[in-house]
Image 1: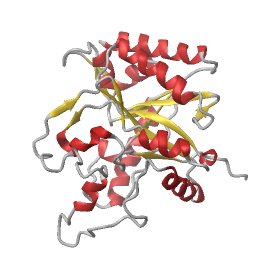
Image 2: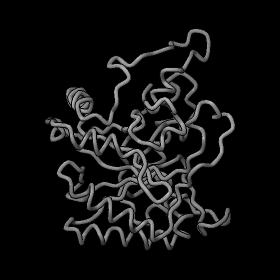
Image 3: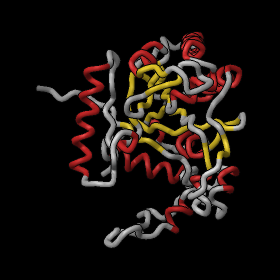
Image 4: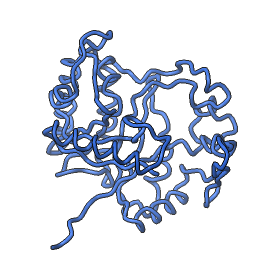
Length: 291
C-alpha cells in the first residue's frame, strides 16, 4: 500500500528577536524572549536547566538565520510554518520574523507558511520581573472596522504570496481565541456575518474560498451576546455555525495537565481526539505538543 503524502506544520512563536520595538517593555535587553530563556533557572531538583540553544541566541528576523531553520525543518519532514500573528493598538505586532526573516530567506520556496491570528489579550505575564502580578496591556478584541482592515491587509500582504499555504486553493487562516473575536465583534451573529464577509473578500481576490481554521481550547464555549457572561453556546454549534472549515489545537496544556509523565498525558489526548471525532462534522488536524 502506497504511503499518502502529509503536510507537517510547526508553530512559530516569533518573539526571538529584538527588532520589534514594542517588545522592549517585556525584554529590555533587546533580544526578545531570549532574555527569559537565558536567565531561566532550574525549578526543581534534577531539572535539566540551564539549557542553551545549539545555534546560540540568534535573531530570528535575520533571513540567514531563517535559512538555517528552513533547512533543518525540511530535512526532518516539516514543510509548513504556522506563524503566531498579532494585532494590538491598531497595528501589527511581532511581524519581523515573518516579514524580514522567512519571506526574505533565499530558500523560502522549500516551505509554506500560514497565519494563526493570536487574538488573545496581553498582560505583563511576558515580563519576568512582574509576571506574578499580571496587568492588562493590550486587548485582542477588535471591532468590525478593525476586523475588515486586518482582513484586507492580510489578503494583500500574505495570502497572495506564493509561499502562503492553501488547502484546495483556499488560503488557510486560523483564529486562536473565538471568545475574544465574538466579544469584539458584538456577538455570534455579528461574528458569523463578519467571517462570511471575509470569505467573500478572499474570493474577490481571486481565490476559490477561505479555509477558516479554529484553534480549540478543550470544550470551547463562547459568549453568545459578546458583551457579558450570559448565555453560553456549546462549541459544535458555534464553530460550524460560523463557517469554520477545520479545527486543531495549539498546545496540550489547553485541555490537560502537563506536569506529569508524557505517557499519561497522551491518554487524555486520545480521549480529546475521540471526543472531537464523535462530535464534529468538519476535519480535525491532529496536534502534538513537545514532550
